[in-house]
Image (cartoon, rainbow, N blue to C red):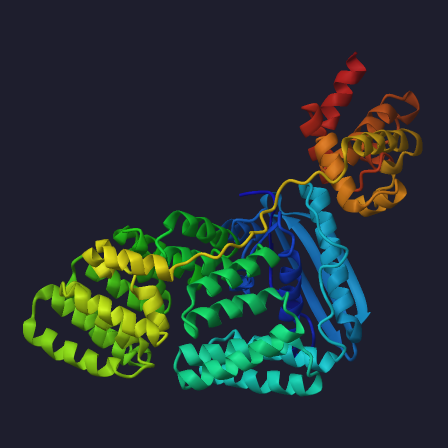
Length: 595
């Protein structure tokens, strides 16, 4: 696993009131969001990290499942108007707790606390792992109204249960939060998210759900047009409401530019590339999503979808079957598994699957369409005629997007290419968004080689000319300035011996030599070839050797000399010494005395 990887586990609720669990979750989630802004740090998403909530597993096992080197764990205790937060960083491979801190603050200062914690964690990670850059603040103040913030946390807690009852409760709480603070962007985004969920799952009439989602998203966009979640939701809106691939791509890319570690946006970009038959680019985004969100069923669905779209049907089947074993009500996995069986020329299995699908997740037009395609494969003319007629009738409804898709796919599989392409044009004029993803499906078969289809495909999947925010290795100091500070730093360490302070931090040292922490981190890595901890400990090591060579110190223990040299941990001292010298401190001293 890469060193620059971290998972923030759910913080433990230490409050006497169990209902404060939402607040502990909110603190951990805010730290995840803050650290995700650091482009060279891979931060496991909330969904995958929270998979381990209330699971008593060894840190190493959790880290291996998430593919991370560092784990952050903590706790939250709320008493009256005060909050105590503890946090500690753990190097998973050896269970080494290399940093911990406790904060006691007033609840009204929660955003300042979260910013302080996030910056300290980022500092310690940079000292431990190596150079990366970040701003002077990682958490922005959402609102001056703490009650609005608390209500939005409760609402998000309910929304994350992903069922219509709790989502409707979350809508009530978000609405109250907005009454308290009409400028609370997060609550408008929460409402937009909730209504789009109800619309896509058909627990609210589609038109009503998307209309309410759009209204709240527009308000969020007006308040904060640079919010990554705004652009992610605008991307969904562009695709599912406006049937506009180009606009969807533009907003998806913007979300990633703002926060490269945004798993849902990475999934979304993978999806857009896959449906437009750019599988290589899709795989890049999918791999990024898997690296930061490896346990999320949605990410795993896209993994299966990639296998399906790229013709790896056996691999796709394994993924979808496993997802359905975990959750038999996973609608997307159920649908694409049926598609996958059709592409494997197993129509009877697809038919059996449709008849055994849990009733509560059956989408009638979806089921009818899959059965129609299966009977076309079987050549059952009576069933074909019956289901084709029913699909045509259903497709007359301008909002029956599933029926639109299956009518197109049926024509394609019946080799009725003229009818398929004519219907394609008609459905797109109705902004039939489901067809936007299914008309390029492998089930379209040989029609995809038709010149008329290719022309239509190229006209729909138009990529905008956008400049992506590609992170390049930047030189924070020119050569002359870098050389100046290199000498200044060496002289300062030789003369002032700041390394003897066991609490020395990169930020402290930057202030002492009058340079920005980002520049100092870059200087140490690029010009000295060392991480901050390595650089400082190398001076401590030489100081230890000097002390150990003096006869007057023979009565002082090895660890005592290490502490006098600035080390504050026996483990760090012994590990670093053996790594640098090639032997233990005891072996070194024995050899030294022999000489």
